[in-house]
Image (cartoon, rainbow, N blue to C red; front, top):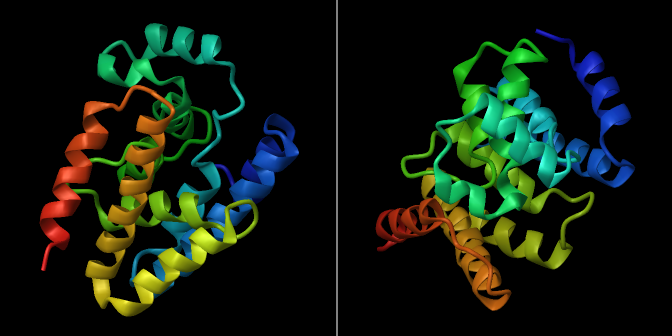
Length: 196
C-alpha cells in the first residue's frame, strides 16, 4: 500500500486545488466520524483521502475506462456521469494505490450512490463527503451535525444519511436529472430503518 504522503502527493498533482482541499476535508471529517462511532480510524483516513481520486477525469475518459475495465457496472449508473468516478476510483485504489482492504475499496466505491445495508465505514465516508468543512455549505453541515448530536449511536448516522438522501433526490428532481434506481432503493431502506 502507498503511504499517506505518497497518496497526498499524487492527489495534489492530479486533482484541482479545490478538489484537493475538499479531499483533505473529507479525510479529516471521516477521521472525526470514525472516532465518534468507534470505527477503524486508519481505514476512514485512507478511504476519505482516496474517495475522489478519479474525480478530475473527463466524463468521456471515465466512460471509456468503465467500458474497458468495468463492463459489469450496472447500466443505470452510466446515466449520471457525476457518480462514475466512484467505481473508477475504487478500481484505482486497488490497482494504483495497492489498497487490499475490501472495506476501504467498498467505502470509495459507494461514496456517491450509497447502497442498501451500507457498512459503518461506507456510511462514514459518504457522510464525510457531504459535510466536510473545507468546501461544503456550513449551514447544511450544522443541520447534519445536529441530527448526529440528537440521536444516539448508529441511529443518528442513519438519520443524517436519510436527510442527505432527501436532499439528493430533491435536487436531482428539481434539475430533471436521472435518479439511479440504487439511490431510490437506499432512500427507501433508510426511511424504513429510521422510522420510529
